[in-house]
Image (tube, rainbow, N blue to C red; front, top):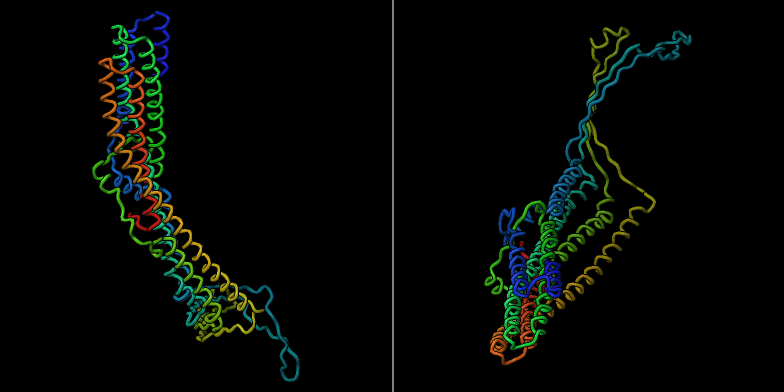
Length: 461
């Protein structure tokens, strides 16, 4: 539409169309631009979603988060597999043998070495075997580590939820900022359209020269360009928000917000002290240290104990030289007992494993020190950013009030022929700049509040 206005102006300069038609066409284009964003958002709209609704939807449908939740089930299944050794292990085997040539042994009969067949032609032995672990160091370690595996998986879900809430909030605020900027630029183009008509009538009346409405056209072109750019930014920002939410890209929704509630909730308690243990990263590191400590304990203490298990075997032996009569008579046997296994020397593998595990624990201790330093840096940066943005927002809000008053007075003075049009352009530019700067400051404050909550470990989901 900017190009349409440019062509209309060129046509007017060549004398193809008159100035009144030019102003009417420009005003019509401004009206179309003013309704464009609403129409593009409104068609195929299924609902209007607030920030909380966007977050709730994301927590239910975001693919990456759902994958993390599924991993908790994988961790539980893995624990069940590792602990299955405590249950009785039952197995059934069977074999069927047919000698093509039976084994022979020599036996002394009446002083004569006589060959004797030592087996029947056909034999079959179905067998039932049962083993039960009574004491097993590896299973004891698996029992101790199982709840930590589940805890680590759940903490990964919590971490993903915290990141998702922060990302959706920031994306929501970015989109909302653009929509608010569009609203400001719509008002700006409407004012400039009215100012353009006023400048033209002043020129026709001989009050001002031609440069006034030409300057008005230049200013209007600039505002229209900014409006079109802002409108074009809405689509990719909606797409980014939908991606974070797991929302279908072929469906539409409008963002809804309560400006009063948003402004009321923008303040934070800057006196709140930083508590490292509230950060999910500290909780995850603590769980990792507990898991590594259990591994060290296993190599130092548990692995030196023997493995003790009980067993029971039952064999139903069938033997017969006639295959068709093989299963007529059984000669069963059974046995029950204990098996004890004690590693005496393993080439110092256990000692080196324990030594390596202790080194990993030392690394985790240093990781905790580094993480605390990182968290404090994030906290200090977020708090300073919030304070600066909050102060700037309040100052810019006062500037908007002053700029509106100045523009109203200057515009009235121009219509009365008191001041030149340049003053109107300056006042209009200052008003637009003040409004856009205030919006940027407002949403930067909201974004820095999210960063502060994340640094404090106060993100709720």
